[in-house]
Amino acid sequence: MSAIFPRGRVRRYVLDANALIAFFEVRRGAAEKVRHLLGEAARQDLPLLMSAVNWGEVFYTEWRYRGEVKARQAEAHLLEMHIAVIAADRERASRAGAIKQRYGLGYADAFAAELAIERGAWLITADPEFQKVGKALAVYPLPRHEK
Image (cartoon, rainbow, N blue to C red; front, side, top):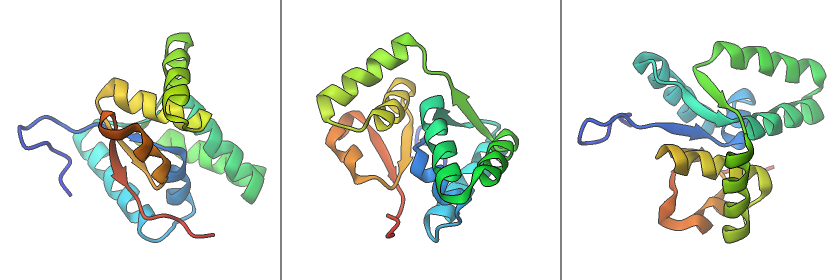
């Protein structure tokens, strides 16, 4: 699972909310893949990317299902990880809105897709909904979590 393209160009990755949730909840299969990519990001000094909207989704989910303390711990842990949280300004929000309209993705998912497309990055996700976007979006698939 190399982090380098064949021509030597470094791969960039964007985390969908479910990828980081899988990591925090140590979901078998997905957590190991995310851990590997985090290690590669640190080794190459090239952080994984995440939209601030998707980080908000992670924070909310952790708080809702595991409590405020766990959400705050996840936030503190995020600051130690090799992840760059990218702000959602008006231009980014407009592009994400267009992706939502074109492909029928959820609102937060549209921000993950927008960031990956804009940066030419692979989107790390377990959500099959992203297949709707087609070849415009490179997806790094994680195993689905069965509830």
